[in-house]
Length: 188
Image (cartoon, rainbow, N blue to C red; front, side, top):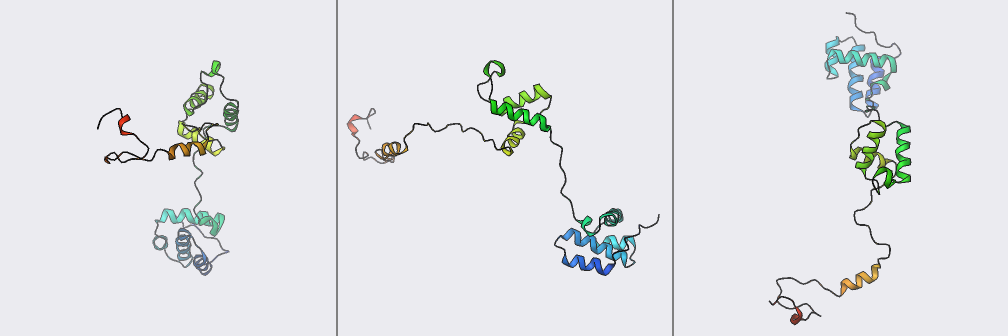
């Protein structure tokens, strides 16, 4: 099997110079392996310079021939494709914005579990509630707190109320100031 010919617009000296300037260690190894190949080293020796086997050197040589030195940088993996199409996602957003209709949806507010069930019933797409939560968080939605603060709660009055009851160590036999021990329900 014949060796793959490398590009003619680069040589070993240029590849070593690029390797010195590069900040990506993996690209440097690949450049040095290809520089060894330009110098006439065998495929096995050139691959050993880059810490790879001959097949990987061949793959990187093909990419180098097609894209140049920039092709030797690792690319970010694309990941899996989204389970919801943009149209389905916009329908979920409309549903969240409009809120549930109790007579139709059977709930008075949307929970992630309810939305996951609706998505499955509507589109046949199976999602995990935590995945849907990440999607909605990415769209700017936040979860409701379990115990919201009452709109009419007066914070200064609450703090004043708490200030009248200093904490008492239960092991301390002395009564707290302002407390009448005779009015205790349980005798100590």
